[in-house]
Image (cartoon, rainbow, N blue to C red; front, side, top):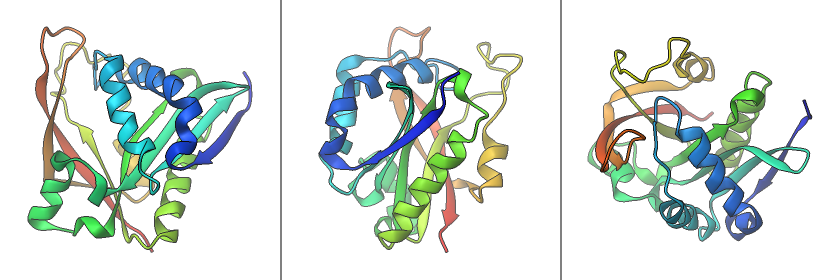
Length: 197
């Protein structure tokens, strides 16, 4: 298997990789627990918000010249209302928070340290720009969900090892179409936070 190399870029520098990143998101998020029935038109709109933001961050992972993973982030103050609102209601203030959009990695490349490198790059970026909190949110499915694989390994232990704490009091709802659904439905998403030294 080819060695993984990272490339870090911001804003419009992501332009050459947008199509590959959209395809990767659709591929990875199709699996449990997201079960996302990807839509190329939505992906273009979603990624454009990050590409148009000079304060955004993209950490891209390549095997040879193939994009096999990516992690994104931008100031929470620049995020959509669904993600800002819980913080606006009860803090910490969005201006203090750097928000992680996603971390996606093809399954065959997991367990080789790339996820750890994604965390490091985003935390370093956030700290260098004066943010004192990092946050992301994750969908929470019923453990008895019929599409939950028997060998599913939750990511919570990985996040906890890196200092992130689940905050059940900070949550939002976001809608997308599941692979076995005819229309989009709301999903509960809970935030995880880390204070940046």
